[in-house]
Length: 250
Length: 238
Image (cartoon, rainbow over all chains, first blue to last red; front, side, top):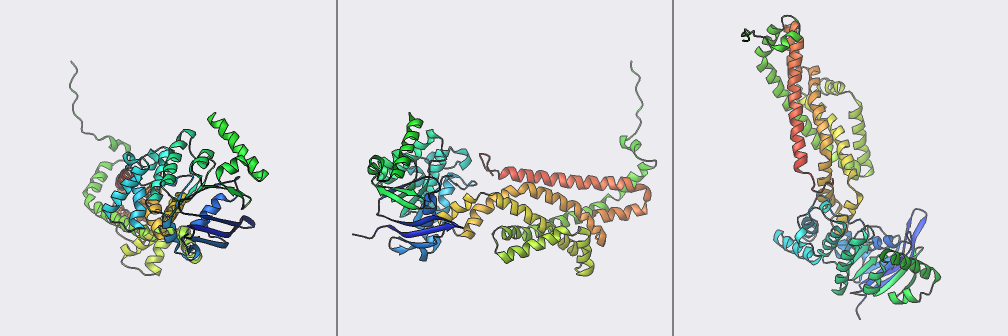
């Protein structure tokens, strides 16, 4: 047995007086897809941001592939842990191709031709090879998010973080992003995903973590949490999600 | 048959200005090369001041946003000082107190540093208008803070600063006339030289140099418009 890819131990983080994360523990094996759900303000985004140190944890340890992330160079850590944002955050002045290329050139030190080739491949992987020369504002939200995924993939990350990747999308554009994410999961990418898309959780997640008030209240395979949650809190939240989803799609 | 009207040489603007104006216009045009020489100095002074203003103002804007506590406070107070002091005072201090010479250099420092103080605010505003998500996404890919600023923030901020920069350019160009106070032979000083020789031609001379100032501001603004359009981000953002 090898070590887990990601291990989070007693992670704590406060903003001012408010303790947002109050001792988070979990592990991820390679090829795991873990989905984080929970009410807003429960600390899901903060948890993700602590993993790539966009927020510095106050306490606890996070190890990636056996290495203590707190001791790593933050740029090196982020090269290995990709992130996809709710608001896409594509570089507005760069084409899709250049959005993917920037990190290849400046972080990984690829040559011009290597960069060109790799950027092309990644855009193809998310089905956007024909939009390589479009600027973000010329793309739909779904397309922008797929470029965001390609940009993260180009760094060959060991782990990909998704922070509500479809929450800013019109309902009809969610599917294309989820299907790209599903393919990544099938390809064996290790993914930590904050989302309220139950369908994705059911189909792709190896584990579902239910976060409430800064702690992991409950965890397990998605079917177990959806069908027989231990806590009333989990049950209520998931029931509400199910109702919402039924309303949306029905 | 309509009788042929005899051709009477008349220039429409003559009737608008006082008697003897025709001769005064002759005086202006006779000295046009002297004024155009002043115009050349005006242009040189504008360019030198804008460049100095950019060279100092752009980093100052960056420091005001990204700098540490002390560097930010230092730059900000310099800015307050230069923005809060009349340009005539700055120019006189540079020349007579600090003793920078020749006058062209003193004027360049005065106009350039004052412009830097204003340009820093143009850039600061432009940098701050680039959303925080841009920096975050750049850092998340593994770019260092400096790389993120250079490759992601600055290219967008520069585009957004062009309209403010247009204003600043126009202001500096017109304020070069304040070098009059230290006798630098730019356009206004030279026109003064002329109208003290011929006091009836004040209006003509002032109209003439106003036209020159206007042509300069108008054309440079069109050039900056073209620059902005050249670099506009397709799709309408930024």
